[in-house]
Amino acid sequence: MTSLPKSFRLDGKAALVTGGASHLGYDIASALASAGCSVAVTSRRPEKAAQSAARLAQEFGVQAVGLALDVRDTASIDRAVEEAIGALGKIDILVNNSGGGAGKSEAILTERDVADIREVIDSNLTGTILVTRCVVPGMIERGAGKIINLGSIAGIVGRDRRIYQPSGMKGQPVDYAAAKAGIIGLTRDLAGWLSPMGINVNAISPGGFGPRDLPDDFVSAYGDKTPLGHMGRDGKDILGAALFLASSASDYVTGQNLVVDGGFSIWK
Ligand SMILES: NC(=O)c1ccc[n+]([C@@H]2O[C@H](COP(=O)([O-])OP(=O)(O)OC[C@H]3O[C@@H](n4cnc5c(N)ncnc54)[C@H](O)[C@@H]3O)[C@@H](O)[C@H]2O)c1
Image (cartoon, rainbow, N blue to C red; front, side, top):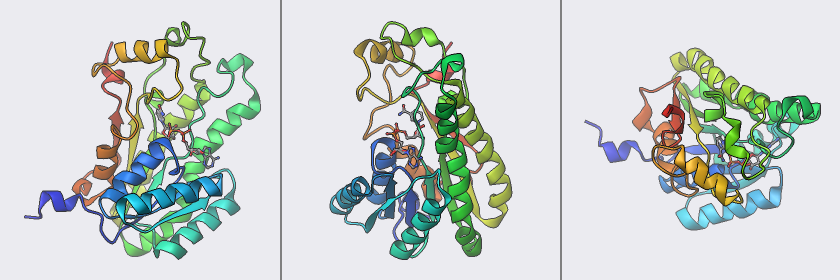
């Protein structure tokens, strides 16, 4: 029998984590690096990507590169994927983490700028499709790979907007929910296509992570609605899910959406 702890190791593997320079993307890159994986992390700001890569290399003693990437731009995607392969030799693990943006502009659909709607769909959903399109040929050629897409509980449940009212937060726009539901559907169908070729495709759907710069009353209201009593914690709560889905420990798991939300989405 293969040793179970060994099946979580990623020595000799290489990963591309989009948006891996900060927050959840950085945490995911750290989880993989802690298991011996080489990593390429990206940001739209190359200096930020380079700084994060240097931190990962120093902390985990792995090869790490920082690359510029805007997932709305196919030339930028081609360049980043080529540079990642140039530096690391291959991409065994792709983490489509870039996106987010909920709460950064007017959230009410009828008052929402059309450009903001397109931006959310492009940076979350279309970007994930385009980066995957560019990376999978190498995985198909090798007959192996792991793809992890970042969905969200926003793609699974509707949001009770009253949670935002006391703090006056903008809240979550419906296009974000649509993009993340799209990612969960994309994950299943990509798995249908790629799993017979040896490539596992899964999603992680986080609940709200904080507190970051969120208002205290929102953080505590959110915790009250969460069976495990608090928001997701950066540097901690996403790590195990990411390592599981990136490693051979999950070799018989594909097309799934692993919800990491402290139970938020199951509580009525
Ligand atoms: N933080 C949460 O509470 C939460 C909850 C559910 C899902 N998620 C999802 O998890 C992922 C990471 O979230 P986070 O909280 O770390 O968000 P974040 O905003 O800190 O990170 C998102 C990353 O994507 C990058 N990005 C955004 N648009 C991009 C573009 N056009 N091209 C390239 N990169 C781009 C950002 O620069 C950033 O590095 C996102 O997909 C987000 O939607 C987050």
